[in-house]
Image (tube, rainbow, N blue to C red):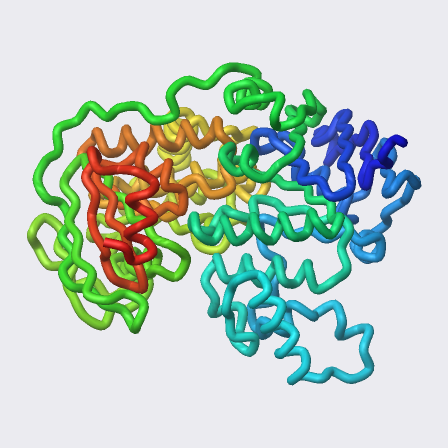
Amino acid sequence: MKTINRVELLNIAKAFGGVKALKDVSLQVMPGEVHALLGENGAGKSTLMKILSGAHHKDNGKIFIDGEEIHIKNTSDSKKLGIGIIYQEFSLVPDLSVSENIFLNRFSQDTWVHWKDMAQKASELIQSLGFSINPLQKVGSLSIAEQQIVEIAKALSEKVKVLILDEPSAVLGTKDVEKLFDIIRGLKEQGVSIIYISHHMNEIFTIADRVTVIKDGATVESHYIKDTNRDSLIALMLGRTLGNMFEERKVALGEEVVSVQNISYKNRVKDVSLSIRAGEVLGLAGLVGSGRTETAEAIFVAVKKDNGTVNLYNKELKSNSPSDSVRLGIGMVNEDRKQKGVLLSLSVAQNITLTNLRSISNRFGFIIKNREDKIVDDLIDKLKIKVANREMFVGNLSGGNQQKVAIAKWVNRGCRFLIVDEPTRGVDVGAKVEIYTLINELAEKGIAILVISSETAELMGLCDRIMVMKDGSVQGTLLKNEFSEEQILRLAIGLK
């Protein structure tokens, strides 16, 4: 007897202002299946899922759930059908508590709110996922990784038959990704269908049963995971084969550029010291909550450190704010590019030049347009930023191109020390290689670079040394000939 598909999307099309985001996409997902959806940024993956979740209306095509054609008018319709979605960009309310966010949809259904019961249920739900988060804590005070867990708990608080996960592991460390996979396997056993969007090939081959590749708004091919391989999928996504992701840097390390001595911040960073030479890339590894990002923020003075010093070229920096740090030659690409990395409502040109307005202004402070245009066009070309024109809003770019803009503004500033937190979060494999190449080129120019990443393969491919943290403290530093995922994980969980 033939199994009826849990989800079937046939010949879906969608256009925005004359631009065809989806031309002809079909997708079939079976009950209790993890179905990976692959494609470059801008291929149409998120648009397709927004149609299934009711956030967008399709222009053409048909949608079937359990063999019955349905018409989804809005997100409420999709929830009633048992469709849940966790977007790459979170949909949480920062000023509400964890429990309030998880059960937000219940407020309109219940006459009375039992706050104590709600907090208890939220705590139990989070603990069932293998995490411990205070249900009364405001979501805005949580780390990005903790917010991701709240998003998952929120989706699972409703009875779901189909769960869409858009880059769910982007902010999770190795150990937490394993917990996520355990959650997914448990849902599979309950018959829940999972649509899994990710740019991480190792995840696809670990958790998925089947995979569908889309390119330029159309379905390319679908395969059982056991019948394909990494190189074949990349070739389908890009329309070409991909060479070595990490090129060898041809640069001799120079003098010490930055030296951090015994910095501390609250209870999150404890007596951390590091140094980076000109042309060197130092990696910062660790599990969620290890203090990686807080260390970077303390160096950049995005948060005010309690103790310690930061020296640039052997001179102590008396920096009291991020603007002081920028003036002294430090740049930081944040892990949360939507909130802190770029200004979505401004143009590509405005974002790139914002950190160095003097370079495009005359002595009276007026912007010289042709000077701005040349600087911006040169960086768009050099960083291979895919835009219709320099005046395009950054909010309309794909994730990979937004990340390139976030880096371009610091290239334009001419930083001597650059901190890059999660450089390829939510970025497709083609854009990843371009960002890796860019980081290498910056290092070859003598810039000292600190890279924070949840991807151990990324750190091992990019870095000269990797420093591993746990509970705010440095557990050890590995040289290139000592790199291995096992060694990094051992240090990250506290095994010397």
